[in-house]
Length: 305
Image (tube, helix red, strand yellow):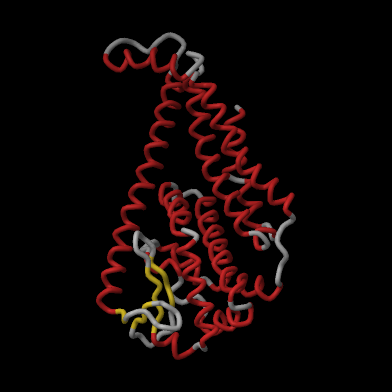
């Protein structure tokens, strides 16, 4: 019952409240950690609640396994177990396998897309620009994007070089390199896989878009510190988020970075010059994210024993 209540809270009211909150713009890294805790803790709680109910007649998962495994070969359902218990155990195992397979499939698909992008860059892009260090693609549309992997690439177009001055260009390239340095593609991959596994679940879509927004804000912070707010703001106004860091991915929701609402919130954040959260609030949020994951893990460990 405790795991079921936690799973419900992490599946609906908590992520809805977090997606509507204003404070994540002040400390996007802290909010990103909380989103990861909600996703992982919610999945563990959901699977754990089903396992706990299914194994309840035996008192533990080990006892349930000892009672049910012989039944798989021959024999009736052990005493105390009903169809609902078997259904809960089957659903728990099926959900875990489904989530794991979707994560693996999404990772393989993203890796193939990255390799394809790297091959195209090697064929079509000019050597790195002396002023920015980015590869230059002959294309009139102003755009910039990054491609992660074992070897990374930051690409800008001729149209972007002609449109922006040197400081603005450094701000755009710094934004893309921040995506690579902070491994945002791995964070987005997990939430993209969650959405692909549960496309009918509205919170999965909300979570993916919120996380994409936070990664864009985090990537804005790097050039803001090095170049300043004004060049970055001007570059965003002139170019928007063309290309964006998700150009290496073929997911339809990878275009979240180019959404007008995302751009408006990024500009509003730059113009407001928000102060970060108080250190005590940040520490409390990190502890909350840790507890959200630790509680179902501890309960599952107790059930297994």
